[in-house]
Length: 501
Ligand code: ADP
Image (tube, rainbow, N blue to C red; front, side, top):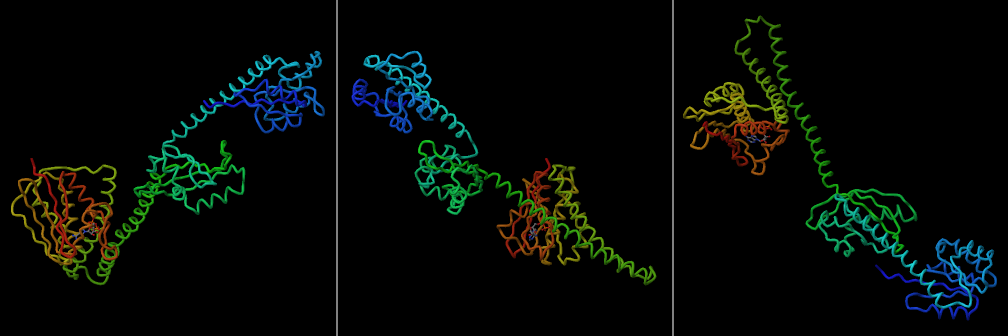
């Protein structure tokens, strides 16, 4: 607790009285101020706080009663105790006037020094106790607010002296959020400029400085770099306030860490962008097979109209139907992929596992792709020396091989494709090898992710879903898939399946 200095104001028009009062009260514990008139006394109490005022009643111009009344009217001194000093024993009327004008006691001249000292001492003690209680309350309030401030987990409370352009307070949480210590925040002038840019500071000044008692608040979003270079986003609300102790105008702020919010916002924006891109690619993929399909249908109708049905060459008819069938398959595949992604998202992708001969799976796939293989000019060779059995979902395994073979044709530049199955002591290896455009090393991982493609959509059609779905299917079989490739040098996709126990 600080030591509170007490001051006593003695008011008397007689210099001799003042001198003897001062002598009687002289004490290292308190200070004494002397006023020679009511007016001078009022000046004093307007300027300073006093523990007690000793006021002579009989003074020329403004007497003690009038002075006391005005002391009471003054905000600062309205409850300062006043002791009247009087030579006359007061009549009842006189005493009432004195109390009415604010006296708390009377002392009679000639003064008894011991009584004087004892009375003054009571008021000085009272005054000190009052200040001590105030100080305790102030500290309690400060502690409470500090607890409140330090309890804010996602934000920093701070203040900046506008005169000195530097932080004067920063809540402890700043250390964890920003990576700078409180010491650095409070001593490093440069940090204020890094916290809010010069332009923002200028903006704040123009908003606040012309308006002295503005209770306006300004909210801004800004970025700050941690010592390790990581960015943090803050949403800061600032306002101006006068510091109680220094009287200086300060900028006060609450800066909430919104980095996570910003990241989510960014992720949402990307997700929306991906969705929009996807919708445009998907509608393109759905539309592309429709035009050739329509052309074949219209040609077919025209042929029937133009000539006798049994005169149409069978080869021609077959070709037209095969072309149509390929387009329908293409459409069905796109729609199937869209449905699969939805099922995977919703966790509804179930396998129907049975012990299966993989050789026959390959046969079905080759049969299904016969027309595409013929029209792609890619010769397919099979290398399946033995019968290989595995516990798989037959349709899903067909789907994986179809995806890999369609890619091998699409990106295989018309070169031969090889499909092989090998069984070792550890696993079953299915691989599809092409001699096409190949895949750059940095893309080899991401092409298995949703919508990821490593080619320009202007040159190659596709949704970027085939490998993603294939990977999910293989992993549901407790297997794995990877690619070995060099750009311009073909690719080999390898599926590894566990052996049947
Ligand atoms: P899509 O072929 O529909 O784009 P996929 O998921 O099947 O989707 O393939 C993803 C990407 O991987 C392709 O866009 C392509 O860049 C690359 N890719 C797949 N297979 C091959 C391959 N055999 N040769 C070269 N690149 C390939």
